[in-house]
Image (cartoon, rainbow, N blue to C red; front, side, top):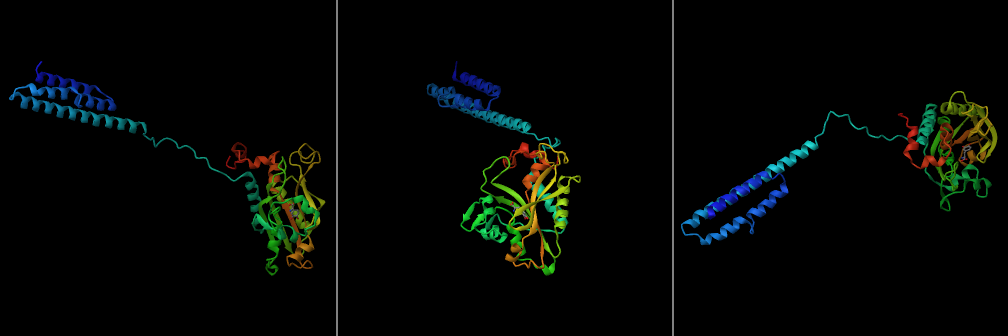
Length: 348
Ligand code: DAH
C-alpha cells in the first residue's frame, strides 16, 4: 500500500472513531493516539524520506491536510460533547418554580418565656411598669436591703454563686424592689412594677430544683394599699393563667422582707380541689410567696413607712409552667429538646 492510501485509510479510521465516541475523556485519548508522537500519522510522515522528490511535497501537503482535518474533527467533537454535558446538567437542575415551597421551620418563644410574656401582658394592662434588672447583683441589694443582714439564717436557703465577696449571681428578683423604690417619686403616684428574669442558686439539680431558674417579682407601694389588694391581684393572676374556676388561698409564712408574709396556693387545676396525686391530695397547689413590704425594707430605701406601704410577691414561671402543663421534671425546660419544646408551640 502506498503512503497516500495509508494516509487516506488513517483519515477515514480517525474520522470514524471520532464520530463514534460519546465520551469527552475518550476524545482526548483519540487525539493522543492519532496525532501524538507515537501515533500512525507521525510514523507515515517519517516514511516520507523514502519518497521521490516530486512525491514528497504532495504527500506532505496531504498529510498536513489530514492532520488539520482530524484536529478540527476532534475540536468539534469536544465542543459538541461539552455542550451536551452542559445541557444535561441544566436539564437536571431545572427548577420548577410552580412547585409548592418547603415550609421553613420557625422558632417560637420558649414555654417559660410564654408564661413570662403572659404575665407581663397582664400586669402592663393593669398599669405596672416592667423593670428588668441585672443577673449579676450586689450583695447589698440581693440581701441587706431586703432585711437579710449578713448573719441572717434565711441566707442559707439561697446558697449563692459569688462573683466577688460583695457581688453575686442574684438569688432572687427581689433586689429590684429596692432598686425601684429608692428612685421612685411618690408625688407622681404609686409604684407598681414587675421584674421578670433569671435567678441563680447553688442548688443540686433534681426534678424540682435547677441552679438557674426564673422569677417574676411584683411590688405595689403607695398610700392605703392593703392585703385585700394583694389577694385580689393574685386572684387575677391565677385566673388568667390557670382558669376562672380556680381560687386563691393565703397561708401564713415567713419572708424577711415582708410582714405579714404569706404563701399563696391555688385550687389544684387537675382535681379542682378534690385531691389527687398532683396536689398530694390536699386540693391545693403552692404557687408563690408574698406579703406586705416590711417597714425596714422601706426605710432602707428611703421610703417613709408611716406614709407609704404595700405588697410584694415573687412567683416562679418554671413552677407555673410545670403546674399548667403537668411537666414533672424542671430539667426538661433546659435541655433544648425540640420534641419537648414543640409541645408548647403556640402556632399549633
Ligand atoms: N424572693 C422570694 C424567694 O426567692 C420570693 C418572694 C417571696 C418574693 C415573698 C417576694 C415576696 O416579693 O414578698 O423565695
